Length: 352
Image (cartoon, rainbow, N blue to C red; front, side, top):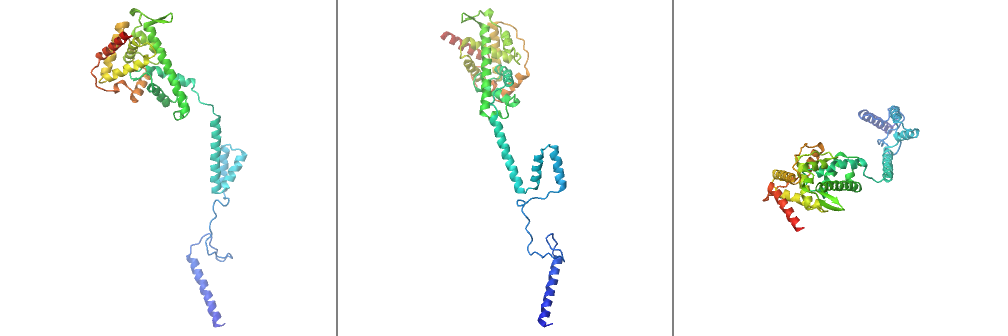
């Protein structure tokens, strides 16, 4: 053997030993060739296939569990086939199928919404509105009888209890508008009813003309209060009688179509002229006594308040539309305030 050949063999042997030594030190991986096998060693580690480029193998246990759950959900055979396909799909295909499914659901919902009939106020909702309107109109806390404030009080109660209303109706302008219109109509009916009671308590219609009744034929405040609360959830109490006494006084002065506007104006006068809630109470107590002097001195049997009356008063107070909330200093208070209202009425009568 020549020296060159011997040197070459020695170099090969050294190389093999060097490779074997490296192989022993390198951690074994699944991709490493088994020693003694015919598989050639790859210099570069294999790159794993992306989930989006091929199907996924699913174990038998997983498949069995999925089929069991699908049967519990009573999937149809064609749906079971879709589930099997979905399990072996790549991640990208799965996500795309889910997104397509969401879009399909959106399309179905749009069809349902488009086919849904327009909302209309139900008889149940209107009945509940009617239950609450009378306590609002008879509440001693109400600041105005017309305008948006009383309507908003009822609207807030509907939002609280959701009386037969569509979900999120307050955010749907068309639905909220229909409910608001119904509330306004019920308030109009309630005001009309109370005004007719005021009319019949002091006047009579003869030949289509309103004739004043003699004082001894007037309905007493207690009798008028009984007529006001009939068919409602209200009970007779001092606050309610005070408001009716004021209504009766203003009606005698302004029996026409501007009655409720004039009543609101006089309420504002009382609030602005009283320094605190006690002054307001004194004013209405004086109005009650004055009414009894003019329309029948009948003892009033107070019955307390109903739960709905208490709820309405609390709701109004929370909304900051209570009479006692305004504390503007003014020269007149108490019974002198009632006298001022009386004087204004006399002047108006003289001008007429």
